[in-house]
Image (cartoon, rainbow, N blue to C red; front, side, top):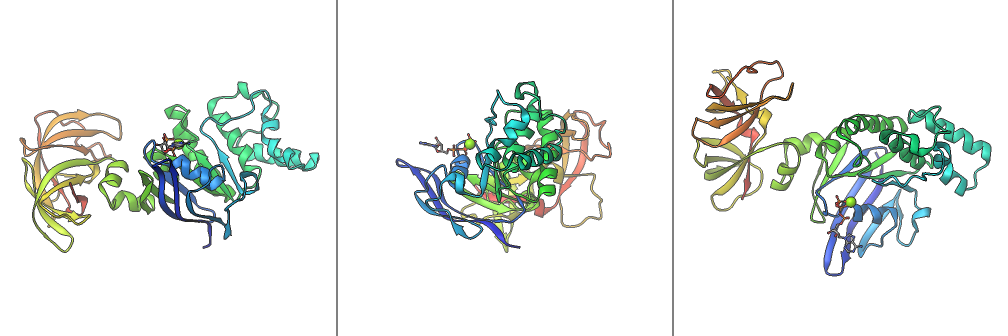
Length: 359
Ligand SMILES: Nc1ncnc2c1ncn2[C@@H]1O[C@H](COP(=O)(O)OP(=O)(O)OP(=O)(O)O)[C@@H](O)[C@H]1O
Ligand SMILES: [Mg+2]
């Protein structure tokens, strides 16, 4: 597979503040790549340098092998979809989509054909003559994406394009966007601070923090093996327990949970000293594990409360009654759905599901 985008040591200072700090990145042609990070970590700054709206302080951006230094945005094979969409409110849907093609002075018949095909591909057949103001939020979103895709960019850059939509519509658009990307085969670089968007849609995700990439991996890889506390805390849900390391060897550790039991854990980063943090995902705690199952950490959970949420129902429970509390996902089979506060349940968690990080 060939890479469509290569970034090396890309850095951007604003005065003495470093917004993007030596980022290296390679994105495979035709993939859905997300950059995930909290507000202010430098995502938009990075995207603007790829698009050519902002000069890097140092480092290089190459698209299909060509160095982009000094090449203005309109001559780069990329298009950008903004969070606020920036549609032309007085033009109809077709005119919005046709805008870039007209600027390129394509023949009228060509433009009409391309716009019609694009409308169909984003599910807006028959909407060409509608004014933008009469569309729903999700439909406007699709127009913004159609307007960028119709120009057949090598890379489509999307800056939090679902940010303005309500939750339900966002859920739906996530699936639509992923399907659209797979159909079109265009490389998407998608920035978001919403980990679930990144996990659902992406082939690969870069987790960004304070101008740097902490980890680049598949969604499964990030979820299963976060390399730092930041990634473990940002991607997916986690219980975080205070603990002390009693012994460590070959990537595993025996730790004493503060106010709780001794557990076997996986060392995710070198820890010097004894204090550490233990990360345990809500769904990795087994309830009433088979007594024959060897090598797991066993304890009792005393239920404090049921956090009912349909198939996502969890419980809040104290380890051995008096220890720290854990949020534990209940099996989707509905087993344990009738537990109540005060119930005691045997529980277990595999050492590989207890990630130990330095404090
Ligand atoms: N033109 C500028 N001048 C000075 N500082 C800037 C400029 N643009 C961005 N910054 C700073 O750089 C940092 C990164 O900003 P950026 O917009 O890239 O963050 P972001 O990750 O996109 O955040 P959000 O999720 O809130 O959009 C911020 O601290 C911001 O204040
Ligand atoms: Mg931003």
